[in-house]
Structure formats: structure tokens, C-alpha cells
Image (cartoon, rainbow, N blue to C red):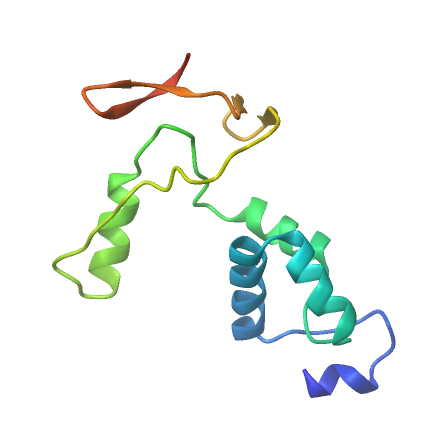
Length: 124
């Protein structure tokens, strides 16, 4: 972070831990909170475009209504955990319908459930 203070506007370099923190802040705090911090503390965080490119390039894309059991098992095995709890967060309200190019689906519709499990790519 302090290394970037003496560099011109272009050419900032960020450590991997800073990029991970920035991604977590962007995902959990939202775009407005991220941009507020980024604009008020110069050279601290990468731009939103860089974060969005990194998030979309990640291999762990989420598909609405699909539970990634293998990904969860691999993660739990990598951190040597034998017991874990996974829940669904249904608190967010999406006021608009968007198209996801990676999964070729629309995001924002209410997914159908069958025996308390979401059915992938079926909407009410």
C-alpha cells in the first residue's frame, strides 16, 4: 500500500493479501462501500474493473439453484475440517432481472423448490 503512494496514477501493484481483502470487501460490503473507501484512501485498493475481471476469471462460478458439493468438499479437505455447516442466504432482494453469460441463465427469478431443495434452471 505505501509502495503505491510514490507511483503515478497507473502502474499500482497490489500484494495477493490486499487483493483478497479487496475482493472480500467488494463482495460483502457492496460496490458503494468499496468505492467510498477506495476514493477516500488513495492507492489502497485496486479499481472496481480489476476486481470484477478477477472475480469473473475465477473458476468457482456460482449457478443459481445449484449446490457445488464437490467444491465444498475440496475446500473443507484443504483446510482439514471434518465438520461444517452450509446454509442458504435468501435475505437479499434483487429488484431486477439480469443475464449471466457464464451460466447462460437469467438471475433474479424465484427458483422452484422440490422437497425443500432448489431445482436448477426452473423458475416460478
